[in-house]
Length: 459
Ligand SMILES: [Zn+2]
Image 1 (cartoon, rainbow, N blue to C red):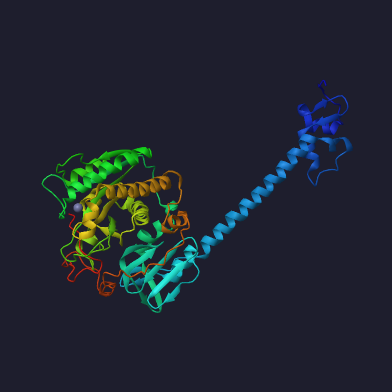
Image 2 (cartoon, helix red, strand yellow):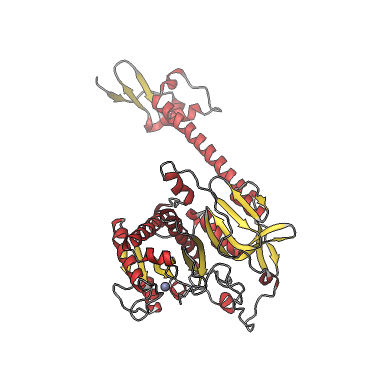
């Protein structure tokens, strides 16, 4: 079949419109006019009725269908955008000022994140939208986010009939874990800086089986190849039993790019010989007390650092912590805040993992077992990998409910109580009603045993 192309004579007014773009395609049987300008001109509704030969423009018909699809697509996009705008516009933050500090009601938080109204059972306040779940406890800093314990900077309490949460906690603890893919400036993770705690003359905590410094170094050595196998570059702040100053550890971390910092420790206490379980720390937000402080100190007001990485750090805590609890299942002591030097001085997302207590007989035996430390390394690796996937491609990290679903026949276990069974749950609300500490006021040290367990030994 031969194709010939030649110009077709058009009416004078059409010729003026089509000019050089009129082309005839002849395939032996059919002669078709191909004039984009002409067809487009004639087929708009308010134009003249097309003549019979003009209706045969196949490519123009296709073009028209494409145009109409484009219009539909534009309409859908416009509707979607408009509905998004409406959804955002519908919920406004209603900040409640209490003694100069900002709070938000739980109802307001529920509305913003699309939770149905809170289910209140005594002092427990539950929010669940099928995607995320939160459980607050009135008059307590302790709460559950997606099944794991978190320690807020300030207690949740009732004010004028509303249950309120501090703005700092909403911004620094709830938001990053509820919408991790919206954490600002979450860069790629290519390098993991592993920081085995202590070393050299600084033995760290001691059990009947050995020293914290040795366990931490072995944990890092076991974790390194696991991370490398996942494609991460790994830098260690110490490779052997040597003392490395804390400032130098932070400097090593800050000299890296596209990186995170994970400090590895084991816990100890002289207050509670049966204390067990994992905890994980990220830097205390500016203007807030650390988990072990029950009041504002000068330090909590004046010292701040690394705020750019705050949200990323708490989410890194969350990723590692969910994995730890899933894979090993030691007691959930929670995601906590502290101003440890290595957290304060690092400028990249940074956490400090406490992998169990050397002062508890059973746990110290586990920690002394290299096979158990390998399990710990596996769990930390999974958590870091989840965080890396979030940072790289916004993949939502796995939380406890996801891990449970992945297990064969894994029905969701009974819900954990929000209140730590080994520690009294509530803190004084006095700090919320007292004056904001001035530059000259004395620091309010923690006078009573901590409700969260025991103060850590880490500097
Ligand atoms: Zn330590």
